[in-house]
View (cartoon, rainbow, N blue to C red):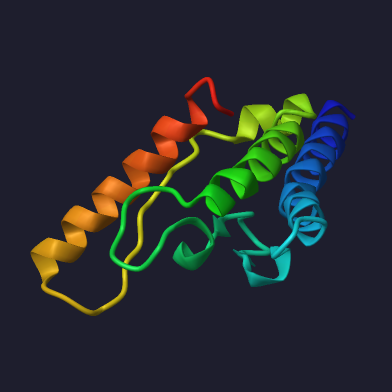
Length: 128
């Protein structure tokens, strides 16, 4: 009987964790330009196209990018921290910078790093 109870509880936790990506997708659908954002329906990973946040070849957030993050970040964190099961299942949030395939590898690696750092700094700034 104890085994059955534990299995039921594990299934309930698994169901709640599996619901996280769906809730993230719903939040994104409600955002301006949300249809341009890619979300993995299995993991909840979110990929924001660089054109929303940056001008081509730049690591400085565009004013529109900052406005987008002002909308996105609070809603995203509300979802992932809205439920203790979600909160306990989120190990880390990774911010990655992306670039085009134009330019050399070193240039693109540097730009990717600077873009991810710009987003990170903005998220933890007083502006947000």
